[in-house]
Image (tube, rainbow over all chains, first blue to last red):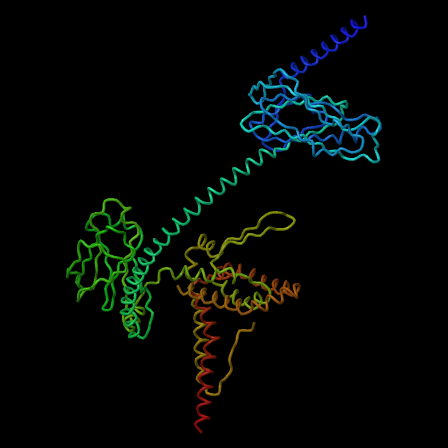
Length: 489
Length: 99
């Protein structure tokens, strides 16, 4: 009977164990939430799920379990923190509990890893792993040792180290007694380390590549620099020689002409001559003087320019044809030339001849330049320039002392104003009184008398003015007369 | 044309005076603003009167040419004695030095 009882008890216990194992296996089949372990991830609080799984992808994974919140929330109840994890792994792994900060009252078997046998299957991250179930019992505190005043923060770390090349799928079941805040920190140290290794390797490779490229590029640059520098020096020398040559001629002439700077020294024909000079036979004449130096500036390449020289009567002397003129090239001017004509040949579209500049360094002698300047009667633009000067905003302030000093002058100036009708708003009546110009009104009504009357009045005024002028001149003849009349401001 | 030349001359003189007096005017404007306003009022009065000058001269049937001649006369009256007096002064100095 006693044996039967033991037998029954044993069978019951075995049945319970089978049920327990089956429930564990069944729990492995539960689809768990997945978390990205590519970065540090913290989950916790009331949102902590009962199940979660991590696909390690062959990388080392450190799972830190932090239950200090559990303690801090339940110091008075006397409950210990314990629970268990279910792990389903298809590769070997180890649990390192050496870093567990277990204070007084910890169970000796704080971490127990039990291979439950059989197989399990977990799907996470679209990866289905069939592995072996493990049971990890976890406990921190003994019953009745909880003291709120001396409660330490307990950090327990479970380190799962998967074998290289194996994928370990971990499923954690939160079976803690408390439903209070529970935080689990997933530290991706393994991932990070792998990245660092890759990064170091990548950096080393990149560095080597960069160094090699730099060396190669540096050598190339140095070689090119040498070549370019030599080219630049050669070009500079050539250009400098040309400039010196042209400057010598021109400066010597200017010195001979008493260094008078001649307006229009540089005569440019610039602009969109691609349109004007397009085709053949379109000409542009420039005057040539005795000391003129003829240059062509900024011509585009592959542009053939005809330069034809004419005498004073515009009879052809000679031409320079089919010639690609170089920048700043000084052109020999035939003797007796008074005009030079530029013409372009072979141009079909304007872009080929965008902005040519024909330059004549006009180094006329000083007397010739002075005569030309004196005889220059071109005053176009002078009025606008004077107006611009007088209307300068810096001179527009006419107030204070300026206004009272310049008042008589302004008044005299206003005498020359033409008549404009006067319009006055009469106060209180609120109507406008417009007075037209008297002369116009008289012309409208008595047109025959107005000219006679006007002539008489103007004649009288002019007569009086002339008499005064004569008197002024007469008074000037008096040797002792030294009175000077001034405008009383 | 004479009229335009006269206007230009007067404008130049006016602007030159404005340039010369600009620093003083700035001081008065900043430190004596009320005095500056009073002077401005006087100047504005002349300007306002000047706006009716054309109407008044037209009422006397004076032509623009005569008015220009009148202004030239004033210019001559104010400048010619100075020139003559300067010449006389120079001659007087010359005679004194010669003795």
